Length: 274
Image 1 (tube, rainbow, N blue to C red):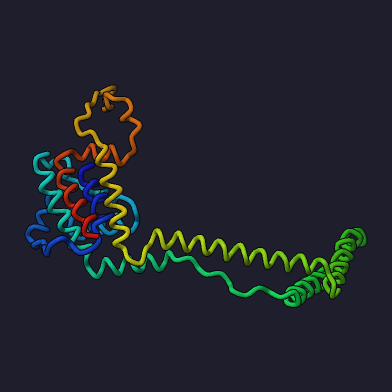
Image 2: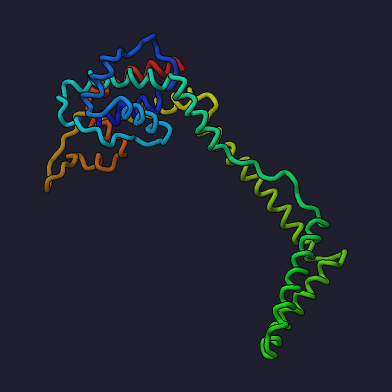
């Protein structure tokens, strides 16, 4: 199963532009790919799509991996990658990417800042409404409760008087808070927009190149001759430092050198062409 994940990592998440030469996977060849993997073409296409757009490796339900002879993995990997290339170059896939990019774009904050007078009017209206509600409620209260509520009512009336003062310090504070919030929202929006442009570039060839280079960098460090030892039914690397390697490193190792030798030249050629 790991070798299939390598195929996806190396190409579904990377090979997303014109292929090095014109190639079309025949329907018979495509049918054979899915038959060997134990899934339908529709399921396979969806896994390719979600593996890139969802940024995770979708290989759930691929039933026949364990039954494929190791000697056939490289050949099947090459066929699968060819099919992947054809799909990700399609108008359908590009449309999906553009939709995802558009939906991920940060929402621009409100451009205007409330004036002091706008804030004053809002605060006066809110306070007057609160005073009216409290006075209505107090009409049905007993003397003890009225006494308790009266302090709150007096506080509201004091606030109303403060808001109505043309030189109100409270209104000044609210205005300063409004300006600060606007500035923070604008700063955060610009930061989010920059991250969005990095994560979802308009030209998705940039994504291709970054993913390919990441794959090549990690794969170049993999020791395919690393020995394993079994303990309590689980395999471990003889060299203990390998146990601390990343999941991607271990995935490439498990896929095997035969699959790597298929993926590596494709990836290297692709980087040169971008």
